[in-house]
Length: 186
Image (cartoon, rainbow, N blue to C red; front, side, top):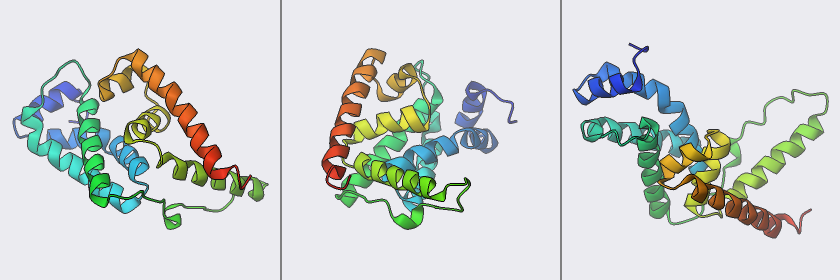
């Protein structure tokens, strides 16, 4: 059944075929989890919210309508809404718990270089949480998911030009936030 196209799996899942929905789940669970993780910064919350995305999708699959967007866009919108609710409910900026980062064993001859890279990534992740949710979403879709501006536009319901403009403004904001937070420590 894994050879089914998304369209065929969607049609079967809408008729109540759990195995067809399982195919869709397997195709998209990692992408949705990554998106949610980078928006929450916490493994446990990401797992919980990802599960809720797919429970909600399964409950409402019969309402799904193909409007020329990929099925993944529908899942990302569900994820976006759940993450927005999660942030509102927590009503605070999340910090990334250090225990969620796996420093692991250095893989190069220069472990001090790797440590500096890890510290730099941690700083960048903390600064990301100061950006508005829409800009966080854009950066995650662009750099974590590797989506094109056109694909991001479909998910965010924007034109490709609007995505490019938002991307440019987001990078400038990210640079400014980073400098504001870390120029004193550099």
